[in-house]
Each structure stands twice: as C-alpha cells, then as structure tokens.
Length: 179
Length: 79
Image (cartoon, rainbow over all chains, first blue to last red; front, side, top):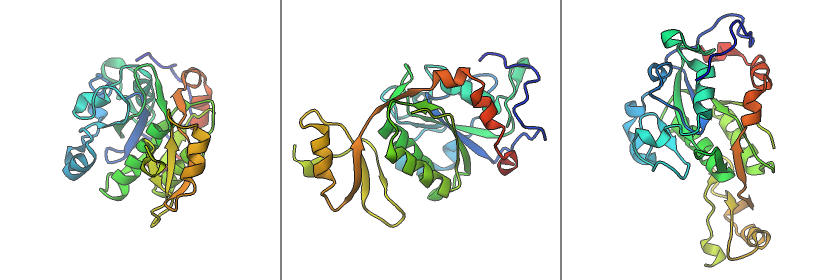
C-alpha cells in the first residue's frame, strides 16, 4: 500500500473515524486481509454461521470471481492490489506509521468479484450486490456502505437496478463507475 | 440446450415479493439477441440483457475524482 498525501483533505472535516460495528464492503479484486494496516479492521463473519453455511462465504467475505476457489479465507485474498488500495483509503489503521483511512475505526468485508487481472462480468458484480443485500436483510450483518470502482464499455440496466435495491436495503454504494 | 433451461450467471429478484427475474446471459449456441428475445417471452423473466465484461477502474483510482467525490459523503451516517 502506498502512502497517501499528507494533509490531503477529502472532506472529513469533523475527523470522524466510524465505528467498529459499522461494516463497509469492498466489492473489487478482494482485500489483502493480512496487511498490517488492515488485519485489525477486517470484520469476522464467523459471528454469522448460518450466513456462511447458506452462502459459502468465508470469515472475511465472499468470492464471486473465477479464481481462488469459493471457500476459505484465501478465496477473497487480493491478487491485484486494487481492492486493498480501496480498503486502505476507507479504513487502514495506520499501523507502523502507515496510511490511515478516512473511517479508520470501521470494519471491512471483501466481496471479490474481479480476477487478478482486474476483470470480471456484470453478472458477478450483481451477484456481489445481491449477496450484500441478503447478508444485511436476512442475516442482520450491519453493512452500511460499499466501495465499488468498476467500469465497462456498456452500462448495464441490471446493475443499475441492483444498486437501487442495495440503497433501498440501507447500503450506500460509494462508487467510481465509468461506463 | 433449450431456452427453457437457459440461466444467467447472475439473477436478482425484480422487486420485493416478485419471482420474475432479471437475467444476464451469454450464449455460444445461439445469437445473444435471439436468446434474449426468447427469454423475455417467459413469464418468469422480467428483463434480459447480455452479460458484459467489466474491469477495475485503474484510471479512476489514479485520479483525484475518486477522492473529491467522497467529499460529498455524509460521514455521520457511518458512525
């Protein structure tokens, strides 16, 4: 993870840090969950055994990419770096003088929908959105926001609808999306 | 493979309480437009479209737009 720009103001003027019971999902290439600045910020879904059993997620999230296999913590391990980059912006805890995220007290879960080369399909993205809605509305996981920084040549109507469903479920998509 | 067996990789319920599905499909055995047309005739399908490739927004992550767009977020909602 590269250092950020010291003193860069991204608008968090009240210096809020989030809360450990607030979960932010990173739908991306996964997260390097053992990174020194992120390891203490990963939410452990072991608290929701039925969710793990029903959906096949691991303790740090779920994998809808075509790599790493579906089960086990390794399934959401970031092999590209982009998801880890986004996770760091959100809530890296600054361990050993490293980067500190804007919500450094919040917790992360990984929704891995992209391969190591950063590619995936619209259906994989929607599978991720649907899982998040299910995890929140059916199993009670307190997911409040989602980082999503993905694009493609065509805008997907289905993705738009799925994102609207997420917002209805109380999950705010903070996305940098290009079509 | 019959159209009645076709399934997209990802589906989601069209709306709460509805069993009609939105489908994203790819096909190597029929033109995608033709498949979509047939799927949309099914009563359990609300809408179908081609499943398309997406990728990480490397460009966006290098631009400050990502950061500046965050400045509009209501951080208090995450406390």
